[in-house]
Length: 623
Image 1 (cartoon, rainbow, N blue to C red):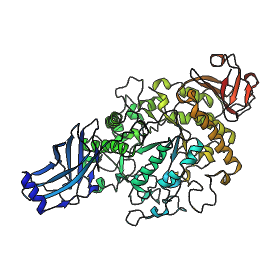
Image 2 (image 1 turned 135 degrees about the vertical axis):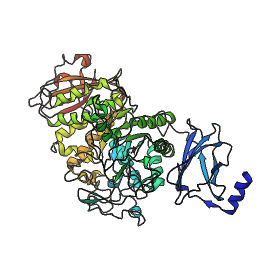
Image 3 (image 1 turned 45 degrees about the horizontal axis):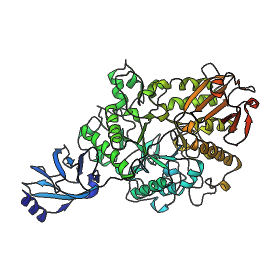
Image 4 (image 1 turned 180 degrees about the horizontal axis):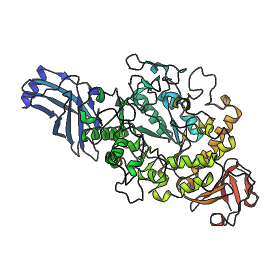
């Protein structure tokens, strides 16, 4: 047989392009030594007595799977536990027709820095800065436009076009982010979105946001490609910063190669006619839910141009899981934020998380669970509830807390309103296994910018920053919030995704510099910097406990504390001057006599503190 294979290779050497093998390469030393290769060809792969052969004793071929679409084969491999890094020559073809293809497949050594300087995980000690790369900074105009890509739009005057921001632009602003106090960067998806333009709301739009993948194994070349992503992550890690990648498991862009050349019909969630998801999470938690409501929530399509994939298909599941592991090892990312979390099959979600935790024990995963209640939020991560299905995501994007923080800032104080709403939501943290692993935020790329929501009230702005940067959880700041970027999602999301001023050569204003910001913008930047700088070294905020007190007269007070430090955060949402009752707060304040304002450094006697309406402070307590 070896002679036949060798002779066939001599007479018909058809080299398979590397980009048609997925994963594109792999590593030795993985805890899971099984690998499933997807081979995708532009023509039918030989159908008669298919043989797939490994040229290395370290790699065993277990099984070859044929799919309905003869452009694909899937091959199960087993890599020896003691395998060395190498290039393995694979050969496949049909003996009868004597058509053979071969390719070299690289097995690399795993990175020794995993868990040390890369794949470190993200914690409540971090401040996450959320960036939409296309709208942040354009450092390389040469990659703005590619005529071989389906979307040729590039116009900064059109809010629905690509604007040219790239990964080099993010890398060039790392010093700015460090000065601000950010320790981690989460970017909307950077993988290839080679999508034709979509029609939404009667408007032609580019998928500049990144959520319509067309090939996970390639970073979009308009952002700089895989090399620019490697460069950014390496530069960030050298500065002690971390990177969170945005995952989408629920759907693929309709121009993804798997959709344009579908392996078989079971790879998609199909309906007799187009069926949209209900966007409702309740049936997934509801013990009384109907089967059709549950199925519609999970298997309905997010939009007509985002193909809903069937993660219950084991081949689909393996393809997605292997990519997540591949990207983590390849780029050294420190965490995953998982988009549209509850729309995905829950069994699959646990599988992909388990695979990641197994290979990268320090990795962080939090899912986007856009829900209204704490019960439903806790359901989609590790929790303390007796429920039939237990999710294993470490945390979620904490929407109930987001709504509650906005209520404190915008609602009049009442029995269940304003400050009491925030207190009540936090009082339900008993449902989470570890609420410190939730990502907390005031806004993001899908929400109205919070400075507009609070009526451009700078006193409220400081109150919001105080709470965001000192509450339990992992705080996330949306790009531009530190310079008071504003807008509502009217008429579209594009309004809250405006370019960062100064990110493009020739911009009239450069808000990345103090000279380019006006007085209030500089005050906002300095305020965030001060509180973020304090939290970097605050053990009480990074890993301490939380104690909150029932709001009184619109004043909400809580403490972050541990054995070495006590931090008091007090915010006045009422209408009359207020002096704290130190006897009432004695459980946390006994033994202290002074307060140090973490923003100004001013030290005052506790007994002299009096708050005016809309004032908010972060104090370190001193004896």
